[in-house]
Length: 242
Ligand SMILES: O=P(O)(O)OC[C@H]1O[C@H](OP(=O)(O)OP(=O)(O)O)[C@H](O)[C@@H]1O
Image (tube, rainbow, N blue to C red; front, side, top):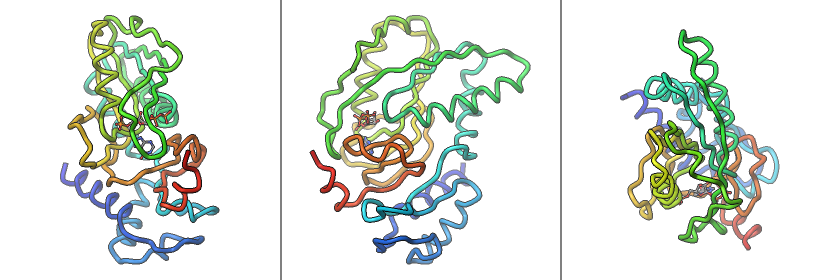
């Protein structure tokens, strides 16, 4: 747990320290010894690099797919709920990459264990953000039939918990259909004063109150295709504002 806390702290430092360079940069060019140390240490775990082009839109970035972090989350999940059938519910759009990587790790663990775990994957599309602001009302897009979750062991997979409104609204909608169990895994949890206190059962990184994009996370649908999680800066927000 101490190691984990230290790791989270390092990520936070790496994300919050100011690089101050709006141009191509390498981790070793980051200003501040702390950030540099953090980035080096993180290398064994994740692979932070700077975006190569259009750097004016983002600052530091973090590569998460295939990382030991997702493997560890998968192990924790399997330990808790893995010995029964799981219905993975991926929250679109932002959750698709994390969900794909997590399912891959869950499958590997299941394959190497002596018990067969049946896993189904389903998708629900929720939307509440415009620009970098939650609009307060969570919409289920495309009419997902929540009654299919009745009696199931549901693992909700989300990219980020910010205010927590999206997850709270989804959980209260699902509860009516009496699933056997519902757990939430979120890659990122944001430290924001606008949080309603919701905490996922499984969380990857705790991040500062900054708007992040990449690895399926978007700003008005831009940047989902980036391989790395980056922090969008004011210039980027202005450029793509709607
Ligand atoms: O905790 P909250 O403050 O409610 O924010 C979290 C939600 O916001 C984002 O979704 P968004 O509405 O941007 O839709 P998207 O997944 O299609 O990008 C994200 O994917 C989460 O679902």
